[in-house]
Image: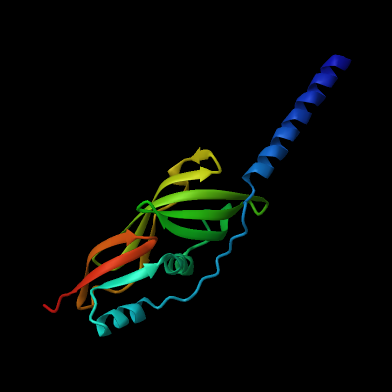
Amino acid sequence: MKKLTFNISLFFLVILLVSVVFYMYIQPNEELNLQSTKIDVNEKIKHMVLNMKTEVIFSEDEIDSIIKMKLDPQINKNTVIEGARFYIEDDLLHANLNIKYIDKIRAAINVKYSFELDKHGYLRLQPLSVHLKDIKLPVSLLNSMEYQLYDMDNSVIKVTEIENEARQLIIKWKFDLF
């Protein structure tokens, strides 16, 4: 009987130890927030037109701010984004997200998104992979996101292509008067 009690106690001690180690492992390495700088896309496009250019360049920090300004921090009913950092690398948008699950468990997840800008001025982000540190999670945990950068339906400029270069998003436009 003593041996059984000892084994059960040892089992629960090991489970507790593994839980504490896992809890510490998933904690965010850096404190992130959702603060953003207001980016006036209309002003950038106006500046492009006045300077007779055909492209608008958004820096990595501007993209980070644009997404954070329109980000819904509520992933689902139990999970909330507490902080984020978005950056461009290898033709993908990367996101480091600090999340809180059930208002108690904090974790850091890394997400890779494909991105495109359609002809109507919407920046569409589609999650490709989600990782909790080195643990791969199902992509279905996150929804795709969509942000309207500019109302293209009532505009004389149209998107011709989108590229990224040196951690910048370059949107090329053309004037479409007819």
